[in-house]
Image (tube, rainbow, N blue to C red; front, side, top):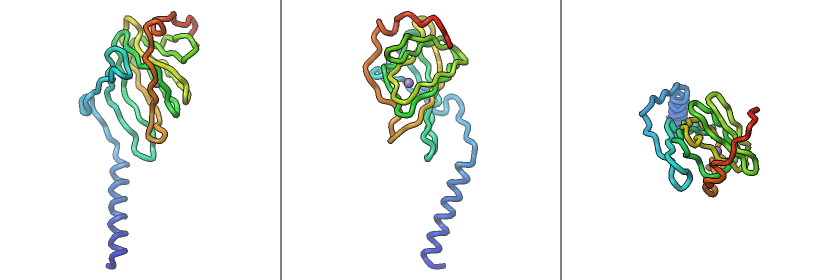
Length: 162
Ligand code: MN
């Protein structure tokens, strides 16, 4: 066997192994990957991210289960390719800059378009957990901005839900 074919064979075997690995369903049980706490630089209050995951390239999706204690919320921020939230439990809030604060509840699916300035979090007296999914662009999934003021956070929630 000449060196080129040996290299090709090794590459083919490596590729085969990689494909075999990618074709295996992976189950990550609770506690297998430790939950992380949201940095105070980007969040107000106690926020935990559990079951954080990163898709395998070329997939660009990443996500996690984000739990906010009452009154906790993100800072204002944007996502380069948008973000999907799916509310799992509790009562929460979401707001796009310049629009009223909206209430979100379990079962609600929230789509935040690319580049839209917004925040999300728990209601003042109720915790809230949502699944958050977003795709990265050039390695970036979020651009953090200023914190949400108490005045903005506690503004009246919009009456209608659509
Ligand atoms: Mn967001």
